[in-house]
Picture 1 (cartoon, rainbow, N blue to C red):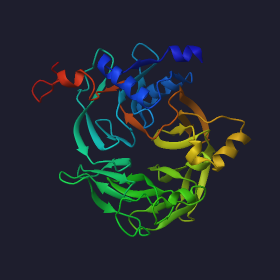
Picture 2 (cartoon, rainbow, N blue to C red):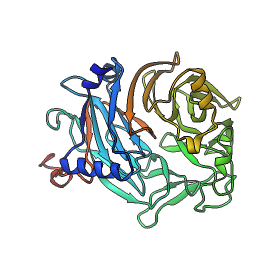
Picture 3 (cartoon, rainbow, N blue to C red):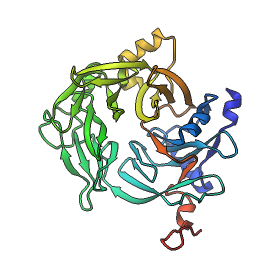
Picture 4 (cartoon, rainbow, N blue to C red):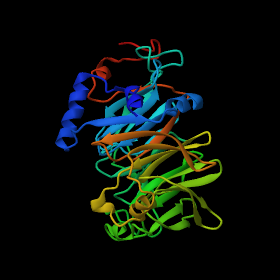
Length: 377
């Protein structure tokens, strides 16, 4: 483990951003030491798949980009975005939901360019949508280029607006009105062909904060097109994703990764992961699953506690890579210390060592691009 930690290079950008990150963490009582570790084959797997991984932690307010350092080992690029939540990536565009905004990043590098002979992608926040505090969770990109996101406070799916905080586009049938009451804790969204297809909610509650009393078995998966509930009885489900013809879901309250048999309306667990699972992305035959340590004040009483005891295990914070053919964890990335919660994961295809810019960095002021001269500093 010690050797693995030493191979990890952490990039936080400028000194000014590092100081802002430290100040924010101190203000939130999170200024303890954080350590990262990886399994021996984690970096090699990223290289073989020709991908890098994006991870968010709303607890630390960090966007982490995990890639292969050209000098060897893992490169972690960190940027501070308050309450970093849902992610979307297609390799060129990166979307990030934060406390009261949704950021759209674009990769400003061409295929033959790099930053500091290290990073082969540089994601710059080009468009900021100020939404106000909506507790936005999963985000996606529609066919027409608009952003769609899960508006958890208002129990609906919404798009961004140039004038308003949001434009509602869909709500579950059991929700009677678009109102600022987190009733069912709508959280996850699976996209299909550039539009939302399935969503997850912790319950079917239609009263303010009603979902908290249904955490153990009130969770549902809903077909957005038909409004049909295709699976129920789940425990705090998150991160529905369509991959290889299956609807995958994290049954978070039981630490399960699995899929939904649409015809039988049943959840089929594949494997148990030691942690509160949120964040699911795929590449090849592998699932990248985000894991958190449960917040026991709010999540106590879930089956996850018993399953951890049965496995004689402690909850993880990090990412486990699951072979979806066998259900076996083959590689992992782990965070220990002050950071204990992950929200989302995303695969960035055809990028080996990405970086991003944050608003507190000096680089965002000096990095200028235009169509004739691609990169000017």
